[in-house]
Length: 263
Ligand SMILES: NC(=O)c1ccc[n+]([C@@H]2O[C@H](COP(=O)([O-])OP(=O)(O)OC[C@H]3O[C@@H](n4cnc5c(N)ncnc54)[C@H](OP(=O)(O)O)[C@@H]3O)[C@@H](O)[C@H]2O)c1
Image (tube, rainbow, N blue to C red; front, side, top):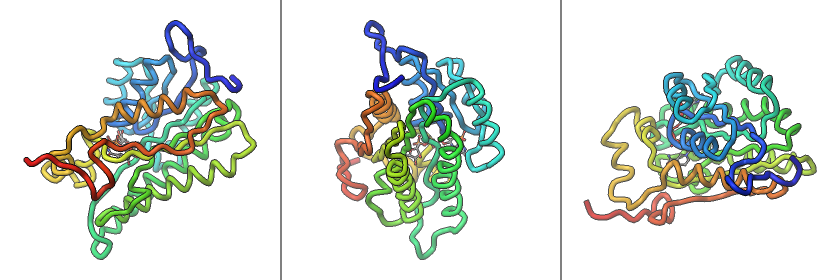
């Protein structure tokens, strides 16, 4: 489809069943994106490591589960081969990622940083590289969910912020390198999004620390808010490239300027 993403006037759904691959689909923003795109008529491949969760999402939305680990070369090779063998792919939505630890630079755990780089930076690079030929062919879109952490660093966040800054730079540079080609590169940088697992994973399962992140904040963003931004950016005409979207809850001016109700 050239210039027009195209949607059915009566149903508002994407006219020709377009194919999207969503990574990090087993929870949070990725799962919400699978739900929103499936409801709009996209055919969605939902990629993550936890098969049971993907199967439940398949039963709910009709998506196609792809069990894969984006930090593993052969796993991603296999997944991309399987997906591209089914036909053209119109969009890659990179949601897989996360924060690990919140320690000062002076004492940060090297393995936490290494794992964030492997997942957020190299994992995103790996799957984007491998799907790029298919996306160029289909006049498609690469979308990366980075973070406001990639724009404004904060204490204890150096490792995560650096990895998210790297993702933003990857999106920006890829966009420059693709100029003249029929492909869009979109970066979405969310602020505080209350998802079930993000902060729990960051604090290595410590529920109290995870809860404290959102304590008293009126209406943090939901995964659905970000999924809706993804849908909007994707369904604009192919000739309109949303370079970068920064989305925050109303109560958040920056990571360190968040309004909280007294508890
Ligand atoms: N929540 C926030 O406040 C916030 C704010 C800004 C940006 N973000 C970014 O938004 C993205 C999604 O965040 P979220 O809140 O939805 O987090 P989440 O609920 O923890 O989701 C992370 C997803 O990534 C998947 N994943 C982790 N490692 C993987 C691997 N090696 N291979 C494939 N998939 C992998 C997880 O599934 P499996 O464990 O099943 O593989 C899970 O589906 C992340 O990149 C995060 O940095 C989040």
